[in-house]
Length: 140
Image 1: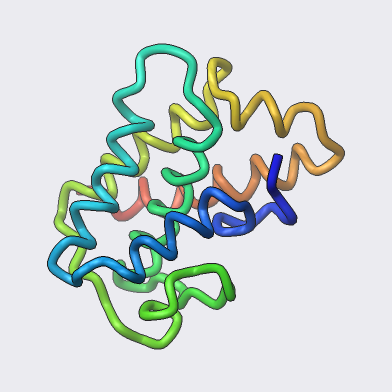
Image 2: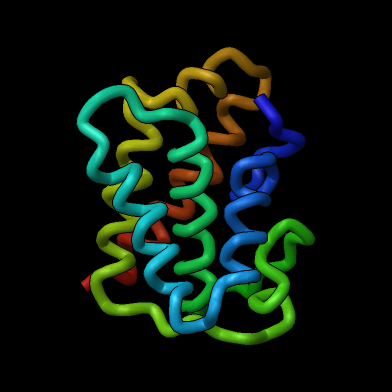
């Protein structure tokens, strides 16, 4: 697992996804966020950890852009967001993010399986559950 901490951006896959979001044309960013969430939310088989890690990062991006969302401070988050730029979040994305995070936390998720095997299991799950709760509270 190319993971160095429990935060939403603290793994190779999420950091690479954030680099792609940074490099994308601003008009394409919402589509990339939606794609990352759909890949996790709509997976009906075993959810690969890479899809889960991208979904967590995308959900954290969404949460940061909603009213009351904490600004992103991670050095692995997209620089344009850390610098104060914005992404307009369509009304349906928080609900999609909740569905994606539910899949990440499910028993048939490689992300969940990998964290089950670590001493940081509770903390990692708490980060994702907290993010899910915040998004659920803002979903229409």
